[in-house]
Length: 239
Length: 152
Image (tube, rainbow over all chains, first blue to last red):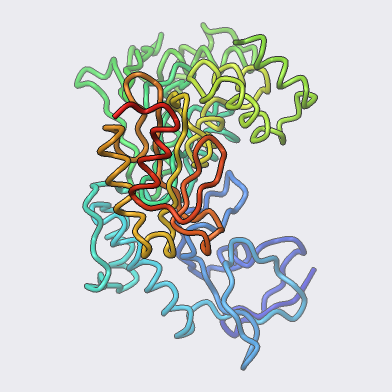
């Protein structure tokens, strides 16, 4: 166990935990975009920045990556931290002006767009945090999506910008996306889900008849776990 | 094609961390990285195609489009730029009828501009088929293209 101070509160934490973990466990709010408990932290969005140390040696670090240590002094809401978060958020707002999620988060944090940062006109809501790519790779285990190109053209896509034949249509990428960039549509009757430019036939629950998951996803789960398809054809509420 | 790629991958012991050198070798072999080549690399190395595509599009040194028999790179770095690389670019475009990053329809020439070749004192520089030509101007460029077989 290590003893540390976050926002003048003395806190005990286990070694190896990150500042973000400990802060959240103790009810201290730190905003994040690219963080997801199911994945290793990556520190790409910089929203979770906090200040550590005191006086002239104080420095700003990403709390999602920084491990706690004995005697560590953390300030999660200092002027310096607020300045960092404000600039980061303003740059992200200029990158993805159409993202409702970002706009909501900015409002919660009391941050207004900076007129100096010209809003991007490409209509993309992606902040290139890579959360979706990492989810598809490590949680789903499919790796159907990745980044392509670099610099201003960098974007998240399926290989060759074509509909992927290995994608299982699970929608995990759309679900973890912090800015609402990945679009997933469901047909009015619910029998077809469209994501990454491909239509997925949805399976209907064998008990209640409700469409609940793409057939490709169930086949994939069945193949990975060995659970027979008949058992998987029951939706979570009927199980 | 599949066999050649498999051979190259085996040459690196099938080690995933050699993805970039493998892609360089495959590009050297076929002149560019075709879709089939990328798929074959992915299958032979056990790296998802999404990741191979990511690497292939990230590095400027990899081309996903076929390159011409003669490859001309023109330096557009700061030093070359102020010494008139822009004019040379115009001359090449006029002569070969292809723009930056394109390949002529007869697959003879491909032309691209690059950031900096690291030989600013020799600017403006053209690299034609791996050979460096320094202190270029429009007249010398025309001569160079004629030497490469361009009929004017």
